Image (cartoon, rainbow, N blue to C red; front, side, top):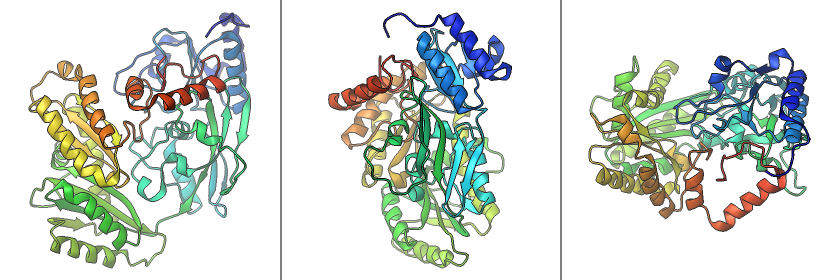
Length: 478
């Protein structure tokens, strides 16, 4: 940023307060605090003001004031991200623009299978609105009770149903975006086919608020599942998981909704820290798969197909043992293992996390090589490899050795990142499958992207945000 501002900062802040009204800003230090840090405590920032607009027109007017005064703007949704993308810089020269008050469902069309919502809508509320008209919005993740759809889109969120329905990018038909100069791009189209040049919405999905502020979106809906079957399967080897995945896709008529890999350590963590979670299979195994198939038909024949598939998989030695849920309650109990594993890590000491993806056929090879590498670097480390491996996404988390000092372990975060990410690159993978780059991975991005890719990204940033005011310091290193 260079040159003099057209509007003094104090005057700009007063104008902003007038635009949003008394309910639209927070200036008290104590009340601002929750907006200035993220869940894991890795980043703590400062801000001139927390702004909570109630309409797109207010967002646009606020952004115009900020542009005139050269005030950086940090868009924020539910602040549930894991890479520091929604935390303002420590310098305190930015404002945080929180979208939580913009939470209306603007339109829903069950015939068109679309829903148009504002960016501040909580994901679970979008799911409920779809269910009320007998439709499904399939984006689903652990933070769905507090994360907001604008944040989901800005990070191109994934979740447990990507295998069947795709990630946030695949679920979006149109966007409304406030640009860095305060103009509003109305791209809220519900068209399935629109071949009229550049697909502008894709610039903003996954850009983490660095190119503009998503204020509303038109999203795809789907028929609600009428028949759902859930199974928890024990495997002797992680190498068998992806063969099992391919078999499951074929046997289910490609109606596989979820395919989650869980190691024995993950099950043990869930049992230790989540009330009511037990081992659903009497004989311990090294690996497990939580599998779900679904159909929009009431008599889709899923149960016989699943049982025949499991019988064949056990006969061939791919599956050691398994349990099929006999009710919705039993299915929920199996899913609590997956949820409890994630939450339980917080009680196991320090955890160094990696959200990576590799080609589906290489998932097992990556897990084996990465596990051997980190164990060689730090004996006693507890690798926890799990995730939506049907789409190649592995959450390769590293829990500290028992008895280790958390601070000392976490100080090696960059060292383990480099080791794991280099392996990911060797497999032709990505260092961020669904969590984004934010601040946490921006230096790693420089190592993992080609010079040409980085320059193209910088050109986009300069073209749309020449003053560099939109979420500065995120995604692209200064």
